[in-house]
Amino acid sequence: MNNGEIWQLADARGVGGIERHVVELVGALRAHGLASRAVVYAPYRPSEYLDLLQASGTPRLELEGGIGDLRRALAVHRPALLHTHGYKAGIVGRLCARLAGVPVVSTFHAGERAPWPVGFYQSIDAATAGLGQRISVSAAIAARLPWRSEVIGNFVAPSRAAVAVLPRRVAFVGRLSPEKAPDLFCEIARRVGPAVQWDIYGDGPMRTALELVAPSFVRFHGFAADMDRVWPQVGLLLMPSLAEGLPMAALEAMARGIPVAASAVGALPELLAPVDGDWTFPVGDIDAAVGAVETWRALDGAPLDRLRGELVDVVCRTYSPAAVLPRLLSVYRAAGFQAAGSSSRMVQSSASSGAG
Image (cartoon, rainbow, N blue to C red; front, side, top):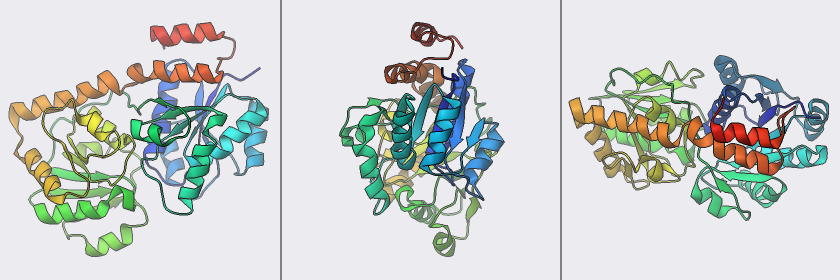
């Protein structure tokens, strides 16, 4: 007999889209009446991820790391389903779940193939994806997998309060690593100048070098565990990424009525397509990115209000728990998920009715 819980497994020290997605997913499942918790594969210290889980009040189980510990946890607790996120959690989680007889689902988030050695492990992750049911957050990611997967985007709760007045501040939110292109953000800031404030929220391997070369008016704030305090300080989210899946930062900003200008990578063009105006630009095109910032600077009054309403509406219609959870639960059922004390028919009825 399973304990009815849906475990969300990730191996992380820092915080990116995967980690924020886990927080949203646990919260949405619990709001839907399904027990869920984040499972931390290894107890890194210090850990931005643990800080995030604690700040958000997300229930969690901390493991000691290693295949043996995960196998024991699955055998002792008997969760109803294991949902893995990221290449390491995927490889180890699918193997352990299959050995323990626990249904398993894996979501593939990465919009890029990383260099060695991470790229090698990503290849193993993709090759072994057939050991469980599969979800991709974008069509481009699904096309790279050797196994068929359901394309189901990330989501955010639509209850976020819209920022009352947008400040004249442009922000980068994410890991300071090459695929996110924080160096391009700094160059765009240099081109536009200090007429608006430029803020970088996040940490990563590029931070030290960037702080040496970035314009003096670009502020580095480091990792922010509580983004609810940050978003009211953001007037435009600028994402000049070289690769993406479906970034949580974009969804979180849009849910609050904050405009997003982004490279046309991953699922970003699809996300921003329903919004009036051209808010995506070619990858690496600094001139086009500067143009998007200038378009935002010129917006005011009724046009800005309409844009903000469109942003919130896109999230509510397509990227909210109400829009996404029924499809996600369908994949869970296909994997063999059955809530404790309930038949699969009861779970299906709850998902289709939207009861929570």
